[in-house]
Length: 182
Image (cartoon, rainbow, N blue to C red):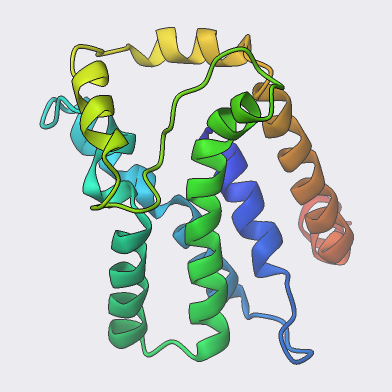
């Protein structure tokens, strides 16, 4: 998935009220960041520092997410609501990245390979994927063209439209003040 889907789902997760309490603006930004944090490794990958497909890196595993949310909780002294929603947003990243494979398993798409190895380091499929993907070095443009043609792309739009609707509904008075000042 592209950052638009991760950001959209992260925003929707940040709107979940726990015990009737909404998150503050800073907490919402944190949850959206958590939904995207695992793609920061793309900076390193595309600068040429890593030749492995970034979904195969240790940074794209639930085990890493557990350690990362624990670290964030300690450093930023997060309350349990923010930590929980941040962790859910992190897990949503993996679900979205693996969605193509799940659609393949249910017979909805014709091709799909596991993208996320949920039981890392105990998943033997990861070694096979490392061998298969090691020779691939797609360009950003090539990836985008093939992705736009894939049935999965419709989910990008569904998530974006949903998040935009919630945002516009919740923050319409703020949007009016900012964009339609008299």
